[in-house]
Length: 151
Image (cartoon, rainbow, N blue to C red; front, side):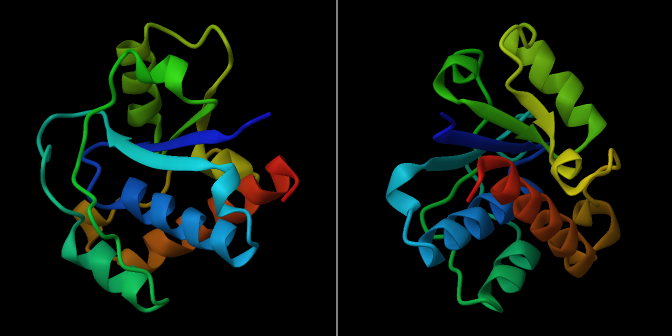
């Protein structure tokens, strides 16, 4: 049974914390948040210790979600054993997750948009400034993940 999920992006300040807190909210609305551990990490060290990007905070606030006590952390090799599912936001993240974890022998690593029925990347607002498109991708991926988990 999948109960520990980690969302991963490059810096852990935009896409992955957006997915973490949106998914947690969906679990909470269903009354099953206590059945899952949902976190997020970065593949890089660039933003370690920084809070979520103000664009992510603003977008989540539109739904009454506050990403409290969240600071960017880097994925570690030991995280591969800690999580049941590790979800990368784009192809570069997937490559870096595999490099950090030493491979994917248990088949835990998935691309976010694969849950939405496509192999495209989650739009990166760091470059576009478009947090609405990113949120739509995150929502579609999380909706698909809910279906995948049978929730």
